[in-house]
Length: 229
Image 1 (cartoon, rainbow, N blue to C red):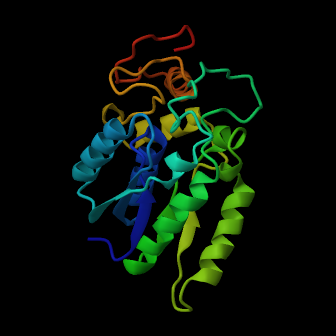
Image 2 (cartoon, helix red, strand yellow):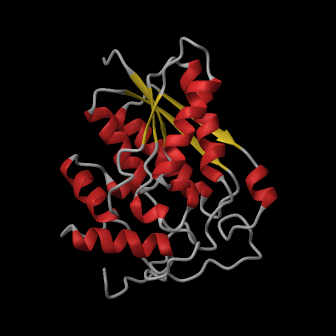
Image 3 (cartoon, rainbow, N blue to C red):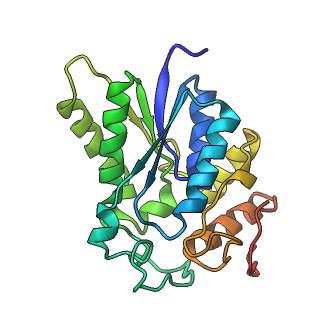
């Protein structure tokens, strides 16, 4: 049993699953935090996160249901009136799937959990292709939030915010996960559907491209597998 622990934000997707295995590789006992905030595929995401917790024998699995992000809206992930757009992998605009300031909300909950469990670290699976579209996935955001943690917790609390893939591409994450034997069949990325994955939203497109570039086939089912996959 490890003598150090880490809270990991586990969405049920491939990036956070890889972060789990990276944390374990670094010697941390994993505490899972999964949030349901009104996203379209929350049932499937919960199912995957829970299965992964059982797979790695996580120290704890904390599931927090929070409705305020869906009440605020302004994201196609939480607002049924907004359409989830097909992938535009060349666009540098912020996509409709951006949930306003989501990561600050999630990291705040995770920091509370980490302080309560006396964990030494907090992991998030954000990566470079996230921060090109999502402001709260940028390295500067995580640096700033580390300062929030340091200032806003007890003097004796020391929690390191780790975003191990923040400078990585999705392909590099897939390659690392394959090295670590991450069970990607237990993960879900699709923004639209819970079974099968659509294959054409941003999340599906980047995931399929990553597996192709890594020389592997994505093990989950898709309604459509575009040419790049």
